[in-house]
Length: 256
Length: 261
Image (cartoon, rainbow over the protein chains, first blue to last red):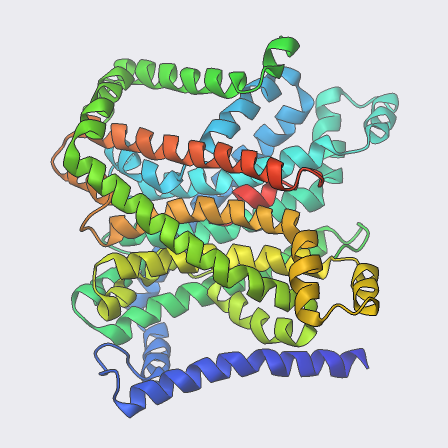
């Protein structure tokens, strides 16, 4: 019963995607929109498959992935450490909380020119932008998760002879893992988006650059390819992260 | 110490002052042309804000943001609420939204520019797209969580489906919708700046990169401060409005509000 229901829901879900592609094809085929403005979907997907085997495209994708993961890893380390420290110490909390209040609503992309000035046009400024954008959701989720942990857990660990600092990382952080991972997932998708934008604004390589270059040359088909690639990349990362999360949280109660 | 931190608005103010001091110090220690001292950048603020052209550019940006944002609310809230109340609608829209979600909306700029030109229409459309998604998502979550019994009672009293949606589901989902609207506001500002950085023609993003290209570093930093202030003012203003509208609900989770660019 639940299975058939699920299957029919998947069928309904595929419908709009198929409709969009069909409509896209119909408009392109009817000639209302010239192929220069809207290439037919068949051409775009054929190009995507062709590009997936090309060395140059893969190199650019690799550059994007490198920046994405470098920035995301730094953001996780900084965000989790600060979040846990803010729960563990009143002094750190007093400094971190107002700073987050001021910095979190700032559109980080506005800082990008400043990062270019300080770190140059290369990888460093793009990674810095990814860190700046991804760190806040991770920090906030870690802080909220760890400060909601039941004190009894810490007391038991302390009674068993655990030092306060050790209890913070082995007990509190572990107990707050579901919340921390939620923050990391948001941070990961943000990293994916931000790295692409940074590459579009100023770059000489990466998927974002491919899109801008195709735009300059009016190669519409090549403009859709990086866009679809980034969507697939985001979905894959999201799915991979969910699998990792499920595995890491296998001891926790099921949550919706 | 604890009493000082309880004065509303004081800790962020101190934090902002601390950041400025750290900036000033860093500029003096490193002494590179790419990082002018804070006081030099702040001195540029009145120059930018009294310059007619810059001011018009900034106001233009804000106008596009407001228009895109308003259209997004009008479109996204009903869609989200309907998704939350009907499994069929949800199953229909969910996968589509899932595919669109990881695409940076500002990245659509080059393609939309081909169709609509570099003017207001493309930028407003991109802002509209960026704001719509989180608002749909949260309206959907909010509507899904509405107590069934309330709807049954209303139906039993003869309220039709449409009235139930506007008079029961909407207010009940309002706190959750507000979380989405806040994310949307942050996104509107980000998308506004990014779209102007990609399609450089007018607006705040254009001022930034123009100044960068002409090596007017003080102007670059002063513009960043303006955008930062704008973000902060919008955020605080919205918090006020939210507190006023949904005072009956407990403060919603903050993670979602800052998350999802």
